[in-house]
Image (tube, rainbow, N blue to C red; front, side, top):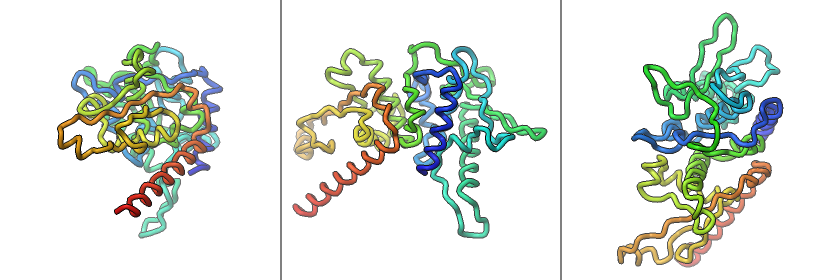
Amino acid sequence: MAQQVAVATAELQAIQQNGTRPSTVRIRDEFFYAKKGRRPSISSILAPRGVNSQIYLLLLFEAQCRKRTGIAGPSSIPLFPEDPEDVSWDKIVVSQAKDNSHGKSRTTARQNKIRQIKSAFQRLHQENLVRVSDASAGKPSIVTPLHEAGVLARGGAYEYTISNGSKGSVGLPVSFFTKGWIYCLTPSEVHLYLALLHLQRRNSSTHWESGIFCAGNGRSQDYGISRDVYESHLMLSRFKLITKIQNPIRHDDGKVRAYAAMQERGIPLPAHRFRVNPPTAFMGEAAERVASGIRQELRQRSRTEALVNENF
C-alpha cells in the first residue's frame, strides 16, 4: 500500500502544480452537515474499507485545481485512459484490494481495485454526487462531479460549481491531498475531522479558549456520526491534527473516572473537548505521522491491558 500512496501522491502533486494551485480545497457543508432534514451526503457513501468518500473528495480537488470559478464540468481524469501513461483513477485512488488466488475466478489486486473503483462510482451516481458517461467508440468514460448535497432539482442533479469563499463551506489544506493524508486517514477519521472543522467555524470565538465538542444527539442528527465514527478522535489526536483538551474527570484514554458513581447519581458525563490544530498540521508526510501515531496507540493499549491483567 505504501507504493500506491507514493505513486498517487506524486500524481496529485503534479495535478496541483500544473493547475490553479489552490492552497485550500473547499467542501460545502451539505456534504457532512444535515440541512433541511436531509442527512449529510457522506453518511450515505461511507464505507469503512471503501473508497467512495476518497474518490468524491479527489473529484473536488481535481475540479478546484482545474478551474477557479463557475461550473466545474467533466473531470479531466478518465476512468480508463487511452494512453496507459496518462493519469487515471486507477493511479490516484489508493485501495486495500488484494490478489484473490482462491476459487475458480482468480483476480489480481489491480483487477479488484478497478472493480472497487467502478463500484464506488456507481454508488456515487446513485447518491447523485457524480454523473458517469458510458464509454463509446473506443473513448474512455468521463466523470462529472455534482453538488455536495446530492439533491435532485427538477428531475436532475445540481451541477457542481467551484465554491467561492468560505461561507457555507470548510477548507481542507491542499496538503491534505498532496502529502497523502487523504489516503492514510480512514473514511471515519475524515468524516469526523470535517465535522470538527465545521464546529470550529461555527464557534470561532470559543474554539481556542474552551474548545469545541461533538456529542449526544447533535453528533448523530447534525453530522450523521455514529459512536464508532466518533471514536476516531483518538487517532486524529495521535496524528496531531486535533488537540484533545485535558479534563481532570477523564483518564488520558478518555474514559471517565468514577464512571459508575456518576451514573448512579445521575451526573451528566462531560463531553470531550477539542481544538482543531492549524492547517500546518498537514504539512508533514502523512504516512510517517500515521505510522508513528498507530505505534503510540498500540503501546498505550498494551500498557492498559497489562495494568488490567495485573489488577484483576
